Every structure is written in C-alpha cells, then in structure tokens.
Image (tube, rainbow, N blue to C red; front, top):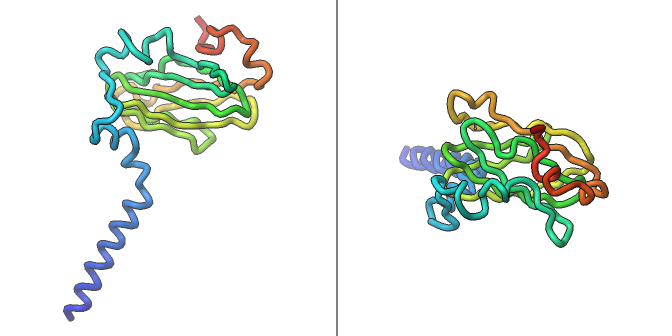
Length: 174
Ligand code: CUA
C-alpha cells in the first residue's frame, strides 16, 4: 500500500519536472536575469540615455557584416514600427520594455522574444529569403494588445548595405 502511494508521489514529481523541463523557455532569460540582478536597465530613463535612446533604435550594421536590431516594446507598439534586415545574415535582436511584459513573434517562424521591463532580451535570428513578416505581440499586455504589431522587411543581403542608415534603421513611412 505504502509503495503504491510512494510510487504515486514519485510519478507526480516526475510529471512536474517534465512539465517544467518542457516549458523552461517560459521561465526565460529576462525573468531569470531580473531575479538574479544581471544587466538591469531602468524603464523610466530608456529614452534619455544609454543603448535604447531613439536615435540608436533600429538596425545597425556591424563591422563583421552581421546586424543588430534594437527595439523598445511599449503599450502598444514596437519602436521602430518597421525594421529592415538583410537575408542570409545573422540578426541579433536586443529589446527591452518601457512598461509591461510583451512578446515579439515573427509570424510564420518559431522566432520570438519575451520582453520584460527592467531587462534586456537578446535573441538571434536569421532569415533565409527576402520577404515581409508581420511581427505581433503575443503576450497579453493590456487593452491595445491585439493591435500591437510591427513589420520586418527582409531584403537582399547585397542591397542592404547600399541603403541609407535611416532607411535601414526604420522603414516606417513618415
Ligand atoms: Cu504587447 Cu501584447
């Protein structure tokens, strides 16, 4: 009798572990970093100083040919609203939130990044082909959540360096 009970508890623990192990990406890096105190960033001063000032947002071309995309997620948009990246080149995304928890998803791919205020999320993507991607927010973040989306334009890698920096950085019409 006792061994059945023990077996039952052991099974429960195992199931619990299995769920935790398969959902580990939900307890993700930014939350972990927030808890452990690494790489903190103050949401209140994002627009005033540091990496996420507006002039530094968008796509930056690195000396090795890779690109870095810097974004701010806030209720209820991504800044900038439209991002241009080259195909066939590693893309490093660095993103933080000015307010709530958001989650950027590149539609039609498995690529996503959860964003937590107070931390920087880093993710790496690569696009095989030029194309246009809708990039909605997939974490319920308030009344405007369902309208929160941006657009990523993936262009030919040879064409990309010829674009003016302001075109590459933010392709939203203005
Ligand atoms: Cu941001 Cu939902």
